Image 1: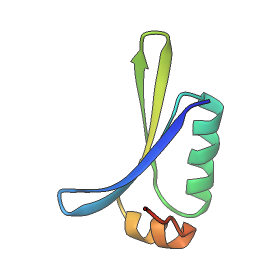
Image 2: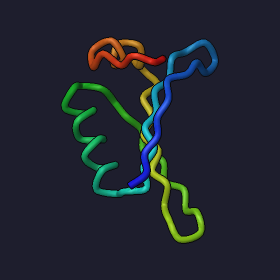
Image 3: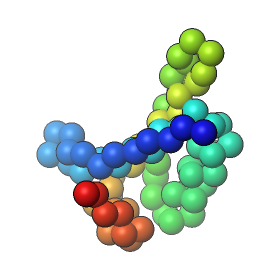
Image 4: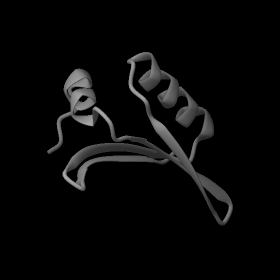
Length: 73
């Protein structure tokens, strides 16, 4: 299982992303984020024999980070 994620600034906005190659995990993360009343965006990119799922939160990302207590070190 491979996952990754980041918090970064894009055009002066905080953005959060979660990346996985596991489709069921991507779907579960999307549902959890939606149940927290955020609007995630899912992008799929086919790479050779795998599909990379990238979930992004652009709007209210700072509030999401605060709510779930993500600490970037």
